Amino acid sequence: MGGRGSHSSSYSTVRKTPTFESLDVKSTKEFDTLPDDTKTTVLASIDRMYSELPKLRGEIAYVDFYERPKRKIKASNAGELAHVKPYGDKSNVTLLEGFKDTKRLNARVSSDKSGVNGQDVKSVLYHEIGHAAVNRIRRNTGNPSIETSIVNKASSHGKASDISRYATRNNNETIGEAVSDYMTHGSKANPMSISIWKQLKSYLS
Ligand SMILES: [Zn+2]
Image 1 (cartoon, rainbow, N blue to C red):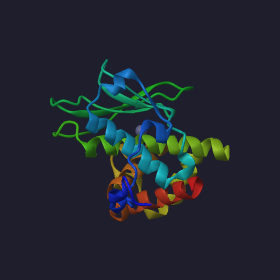
Image 2: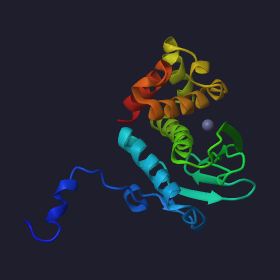
Image 3: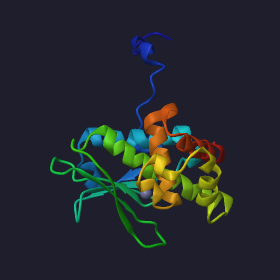
């Protein structure tokens, strides 16, 4: 009681800053070269998704970053990756999905004029972690087409094109975009995104 540190009690309700250790996520040397605010954003995004979807914890094994052919941040297991031609230019946010057992797929999901900033990195990370969530649900349920079931159930609330153009690509991307929409906009997200999100929560809570 009292003594050193007692002055910090006013911070006791502040959420602890996530670390690689607390999330059990490894990083590569290349990732460690990123600016601190980018690293913080990556950790915070993973932390927030783990908090929302407790049974997702542990799904992201490591984060990586590489510059060729394009700058990308990679977060396994879902293979996935966000990023970026970060420092100016056209600032295309690019992601790479490298599912272990299947072919690699590059997809440019969005672009913006502002370069790397927390919001853009976050929205892509949420999309990617959305894929990780589906992967885990697929394993947990043993249902190889669980994404179709989730999207079909949500379809009474709207259609993929209501969420984004990229969401129309396939059911997996519908879910990725819905997660990004929900995590970015909360209760103001598209109703179909909210329906998808609720299902993810029911599987992973
Ligand atoms: Zn995707």
